[in-house]
Image (cartoon, rainbow, N blue to C red; front, top):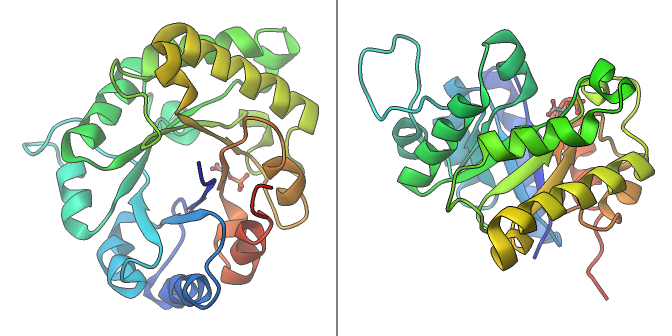
Length: 249
Ligand code: PGA
């Protein structure tokens, strides 16, 4: 399975930044990387980003509503994302869980909405710093998988992103040992619940991935890609990350 290198622009990006997407797409065309490349800009840029990308890289949303349409002011449905040219959506990012009070059940419903329209769902999980300190990191993540990954969703088309909250927007990423331990645990949970199909789902790591640490993280067992915040905003940084993957021997 090719690794997925996904960029999450969060609430950053004006029309003037579309050139970064153009530059990433041009680089991918000039020298195809050994990865899938996805950028999730703010919703206001999705349609124009998709036009500029012209299929050379994938464009995704950062969240979606569980319903297809209706009286939900400010909401954006998976149908709308797809219509704008998105082929993926991040659901359950910790910033949504924290600041928008999203529960596991809500995240699962959003993932199902993505599935309904045939776009990829990237389901985020991750523990807080106090939870890790109390030795609860593994159980918090298993509970989030149990609650946020709907039945039938397990396939290589979808992904789990493990993003420990203490490593997001931080000075440094989780250590290779912490990442390896958690991703092995996540795989174990997926296989325990979904059997052989649980082996097919991509597991990403996210939290302070940058051009300097990407190679080491991407080489870890079970790491099927990365979800990148700050270092996806500039084409040069993001390119250094997807170029950090060499073909498997
Ligand atoms: P960061 O964000 O790379 O800036 O730490 C990652 C994320 O929140 O997806």
